[in-house]
Length: 326
Image (tube, rainbow, N blue to C red; front, side):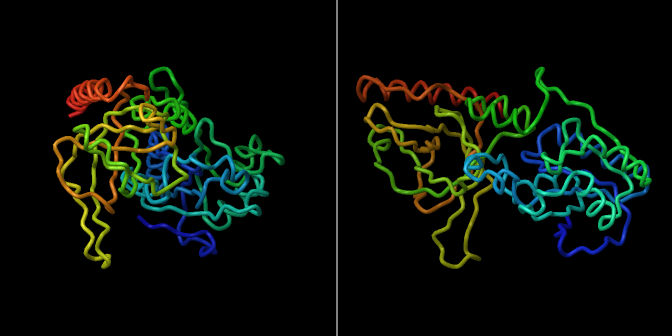
C-alpha cells in the first residue's frame, strides 16, 4: 500500500476516485464504502484513493476529550485498510489551520487541484470541513459543477444499529465487546507490556500477566472480566531490535480482569490476563489481547475462598465462550 503525505504532493500523476474520512475502526460500514470506492474507480477507470488524517480531529480541537477515544492507532488503521484492498492512501496533517477549511474549500484546494479527483464517494453520515463554516450541503452541487461524479453510500445496519465509530465506542465503553466485534468485523484488541504486579494471582492458582497499556489514546472496555485470546507475545527483553521475537502462531486462550481488585481493597484499574495452560516468564514482553466476550462485572467477594470458586467458574465460562469462537 502506498501512503502519500499531502504536503509532499503538488499534483498526483493520475486521476482519482476519492473517499474522505478518519476511518477509525475500519468497521463493516467503512468496508462497505471501500467496496463502493473500488467499484466506482473500476467503472470509471480511475485510481482509488482514501484520504484520511494523521490524527483524530478531537486530538487537536479538544485534546482533553481525546484520551481513551480512538478505536485504532494509525498503524492498525493502515494495516486494516490494506487488508481491505486499499492501495493508495493520502494522509493529511490535521492542524488548527486544516480545521479552518470548509468542506468546499477542502474539496477545491485538496481533492480537486492536488489529487485530481474525478469521482467522490461519501458515507451516509460523512462530513468534513469546519463546522462553524459548514457548507457541506453545497459540496455535491459544487463537485458536479466541476465534472466530479458524487456517490453517496446508504446506511449499513447490523442488529438494527446503524454502524459507526461512535457506536463501536459506545459498545466498548459499556463492556459489550461481542457487539463491538460484530460492528467492527473483527474482535477488539489492546496491547501492552507485562510488568510486575502483586503476584497474588499465582498464590490463588490463577497466575496473571499484569499488562501496562502501551497506548493511552485507545478506547478501553468497561470494567469487567472477559474471555480473551492472546494473539502475540513479543519478547522485548533483547536490546537488539532484530532479536525480538513474536509468537503469533498460537492463539492462546485466557481470561482478563479489567478494573479494580475490590476483594483486596484496591480500586486502581489494572489489566490482568490469565493465560490458560501457559507457563513462562512474560515480564517485559508485549501481549496483544483480543476481547472475545464479557463474563461478568468486577465484584467484591467475601474472602479468598469465595474468589477462587468464582475464578474457577469464570475459567469454565471463558472456555465455553472461546470454544464457540473457534
